[in-house]
Length: 271
Image (cartoon, rainbow, N blue to C red; front, top):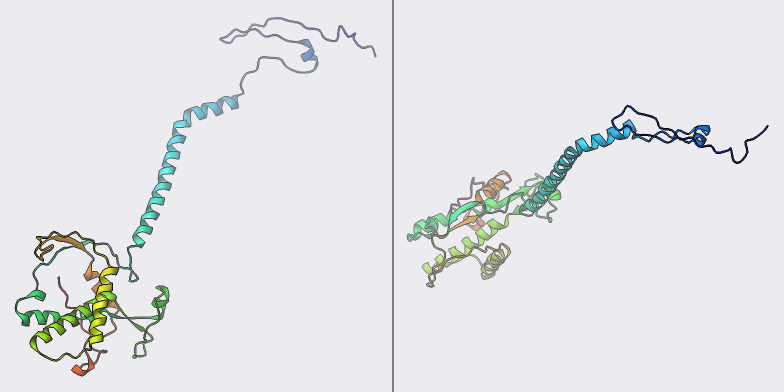
């Protein structure tokens, strides 16, 4: 078979071809490319490429807006979780909130401070710290990871616990009663070590439950009288203990009433 000479192996032909498009451009064709089956027509973007770029151009703003909404949604969920975590720190083992939500007036005159000792003593006697003695079942104890406590002697399988705020109230009531009896020259049934225990229990209670309310003063032993403040919700605690009462009454056996099986509704406390 005869082959073209080296000189004739590459032949270039140039011509112009008119196009009906707006540009009316001309194109160069190389016959060597034609022999190899390669088209040298001008390269134009494929329809797929054009449609993708067009879609991207038309939808960029929508994509950015969608992304912004996603970011906002994620941030909202994150903020809610943080708030939930923060709120959890204000919940005690009872599940009650420790946030101060109740408005009170400091040192507002009450029956507990009556100048009539008979009225005042009756008000204090009506306070029932035993209302804070509660009975919890084993599942509740395990759920709250509470330390072991004494079982109730009623074969219910429940265990007896004391709410500390009520214990502090008990100690305050006992010390006041001792003071009044000393004023009246009457005998006192509690021992001195119990008084010392109560005084230190109140000290610890105050230091543990720090109240940083800033009180006004006139420099003459008068501080915060008539001043408003926010307090924890005692009524919520009362309602909690009401539902879990151990049916307990806080008097001594020598007074003729046993501790158990003497339930009283409410705790007798008012502001």
